[in-house]
Image (tube, rainbow, N blue to C red; front, side):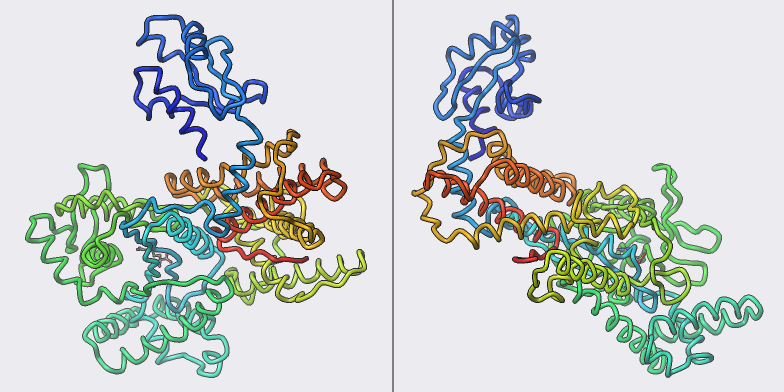
Amino acid sequence: MDYKKVVAERIKENVELDIETIEKLIEIPPKPEMGDYAFPCFQLSKVMRKAPNMIAEQLKNNINKDGFESVQNLGPYLNFFLDKSVFISETINKILTEKDKYGSSNLGEGKNVIVEYSSPNIAKPFHIGHLFTTSIGNSLYKILSFEGYNCIGINHLGDWGTQFGKLISAYKRWVDEDKLHKEPINELLRIYVKFHDEAEKDPSLEDEARMHFKALEDGNEEEVKLWTKFKDLSLKEFKKVYEMLNVEFDSYAGESFYSDKMDAVVNEIEDKGLLTESNGAKVVMLDEYNMPPCIIKKADGATIYATRDLAAAMYRKKTYDFYKNIYVVGTPQALHFKQVFTTLKLMGYDWADDCKHVGFGLVKFADKKLSTRKGDVIFLEDLLKEAIEKTLGIINENEKEKNKAIENKEDVAKKIGIGAVLFTYLKNNRERDIVFDWKEMLSFDGETGPYVQYTYARGKSILRNETNIGDLQDADYSKLNSKEEFELVKYLDGFQSSILNAIDKLEPSIVTRHIIEIAKAFNKFYNQINIKNTEDAKVKNARIKLVESSCQVIKNGLSLLGIDVVEKM
Ligand code: ARG
């Protein structure tokens, strides 16, 4: 039950404030002796022309206290104390009845939400920065779907633009087919870099590249064939990573998908009187909004990134009639999206306000010894493999130390290792930079993926060892009156509100942090209360149900982050 709502309704029965205002005023007190919810009476004092502490006293006398242990006034505050055993049994019953659905709702029913994420560039490495957009986008997709929104996950591949003319030139001149076969992205990167070096010495190469791109745009067979080859090779590499991460998309409509939809957009902008000439280029002026112009066509007549984004937004509106169109793209592109959204607005599309850019920070390294194939770029595939290997090493050590065998070691290492990396990306406010540190990330203590995973497995092992779990009626919740038990249940109860908050701010870390709090509260409970030796069978059952509920909520929470749990470790 949502007790905050109940509190608000009870107050509403006695005062002249609307329910939303009351809900906003309700606080969670800092100390348990001040109750579980508190309502400050200052605002009422103006309406009722009475001192706040007198209002609090009056409310205390008149309010319906059903379902609460007590309602008390303390100075200007009205404090509500939950009937703990009712609260605990209701919460646990709800979790164990709803299971994998606990925390979900149909809030978003009938609303289409586009989540655009990952969107790597063809013929370029899928590097560690791309995991930021991939993990946040994947998590937002899951979180929104969990609350009933109909999500469409789009991978807006960077697969169009003048750089493909350069790549075709480079390919025809310098490719090593053998290397291309073995390490496609590295070879494509190598020849692309070489093109730039050579073009500095011989600028005519640029003309050649332009010619190839033009031919590609015109659908010339040779160029299309090469471009398709680059794209296929790249996607094959990217899909290896998506498979490791268990990430999927509903659509791979990338930049090239819009190549034939661009003329219409340019014409429309022109018809609406928004197109201006500037140094040979065609632009939409945005001075009024304190922004540089949005370039629509370059001086050589080629359309660019922004034009394709305009076409994409319009296509998405037409095809999906979205409620929200979310772009999970690094913060350095904030200006680009502002320009695109403002241009759409100038074109008369009010739905431009439903387009949201979800930015994120940079990834930095604490230790420089990360394995790289070559150069400075760290391929995500290598990073994930290293995480799995390192986790396997830790598991092997633990086995020796504790002298116990772990089943399905490879699978456990994969789930924990990849989970640890994802957890690191999703743990903090997304705008914050990540400092990557293997030791910290893979540690079983602290606010890490392995810590939460371990907590889950610990709970599961208790459940495996306790075979006499009766049904829900056989549990006596009235004796779960320790501080630890009550705190844990409060966090379990607050799970959905953390999800709704995450949706409100498009910030998965709010869910991550809540799971961390649940794991911490669980471990406090586990260390403080002797579950195994609880004498009264019904009380013991109640505690076991609490363990089961905690595991369930941790599992539901991790799955919203795209992380799998392991039953034993
Ligand atoms: N391909 C781009 C990159 O890797 C990101 C694309 C972002 N999405 C968009 N609709 N512009 O930087």
